[in-house]
Structures are given as C-alpha cells and as structure tokens.
Figure 1 (cartoon, one colour):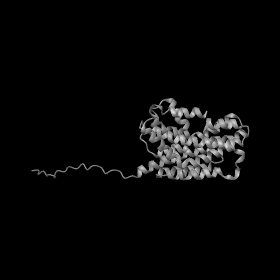
Figure 2 (cartoon, rainbow, N blue to C red):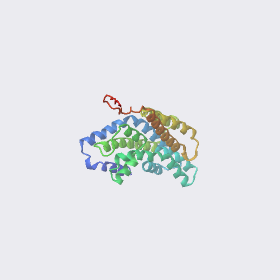
Figure 3 (tube, rainbow, N blue to C red):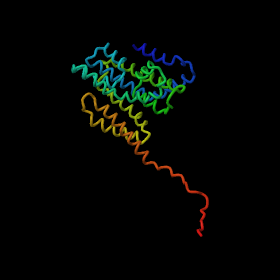
Figure 4 (cartoon, one colour):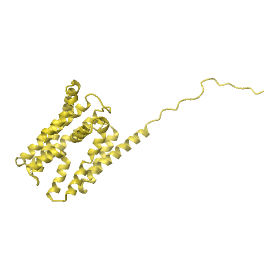
Length: 269
C-alpha cells in the first residue's frame, strides 16, 4: 500500500519532474513543512499507539493508518469500535470530523482545476490541515503556475512520511511507550506556533476566536459534531469580519463635475 501511494504521487509529477523549477519548488515545500515535522510525528505516534491499544489488531491498525490518513477521525472512531456501536455511527462520526476537508478541497480547487480527476483525487488524499495552511500562506495565483504543484507535493511528501513513519512506530512499539509521556500534548504545543503565525488579519483572528469558543461549548456533542460546527462558525465569523471591514473603509471621493469655466451672467433687457 505504501509503495503504491508513493509511486502514484511521483507519477503526478512525471511530465515535468526533471524541471529545475519543479525540483526547487519541491524542496522549498519540504523546507516550508520542516517546522511542523515534530508536531506531525508526535500526533502520528500517539495515533499509532492508540490504535494498537484499542480493539484493532496490528494489521488492522496498519491498514487504517495508510488508508485513512486522518488522525482526528482515527482517534474519534476508536472508542466507537471498542463500544461495538453500529457501523453507521462510526461512519457518521468520521464524516463529521473530516467535514473540514471539504472546505480545504474547495480552497484548492481553483489552483488545480486544470488537472485530471485522478490527479485531483490524489491531491485530496494527501491534503491536510497543516498542508493547506502552509500552501494558502504562499498566496499563489489561481490556475497553472510553474512549480506550484511541485511545492504542494513537497509539503505533502514531508507530511505523509512523517506521519506514517511515526504511526508505524507507535503501532509496532505501543507496548514499549508509556501512556504518561504526554505525546499528545507535545503535538498540540508544537502546532500552536503554526496556528498563531497564520493569524495575519482581523478576519482570521475573528475566525480563530469564534471557532475556539464554539469548539469548547460544543465539546460534549455526540459524533464529534462540535468540530464541523466550529469550522462553519469560523467561516461565518471571518466572512462577517471581512464585510464589516469593507464597509468601514472610506469611500472614494466623488468626481467633481462642476464646470471649470468661469460663470457668465446674462443681462436681461
């Protein structure tokens, strides 16, 4: 499975993989993602350990890691598997947690709409929270641009390998990793600087603030419904902040349409 995914990813750059522009862009993506390697590795390790210590066997955990590749939903459904809840409950919970990827895909669509369906589906598999954040911060113009897809693959490859290596380590060595290491907290702490660095506008600040409040208030909702609810609340808050900011900007002065010619008087006799 892993070799097939990697070969598909390399195939997507086959047409221009020897281009100097693509090569530089790819390694620029790798360098851009490097600050997030620690957070990704920590989360992958936590997820791998959690899967093995749940009801999943080692082969099932490995298959889930490579096929799903979404730590939040993987962790969310493990208690449901343990409780032997119906399959529709597991699928609904995973869908609620991963609903944010619909928004990420919509954000990437204008950049890669020229690609074939197969390559766009492949991009969707490798996309993730940090990848989308770092890609968006580059402010690429929409449509085709030299090196843009290669930059995405630099981010995606770094994220995928960091996650899968750590996840496999956690799956295979779960019995040797104590629960009190606090790896989940380490991953969260490593993600905080990345999130803070993305708050560059008032609308982004409003979205983060509203999402944080909604996520806390909706934490106990079933099926992890609080996560998509906080995402949609953030979208609404950010949009409203942009609208309010646009209305608050001073309007350009109206053109002076008065005639520059000196006024003349008519004498009525």
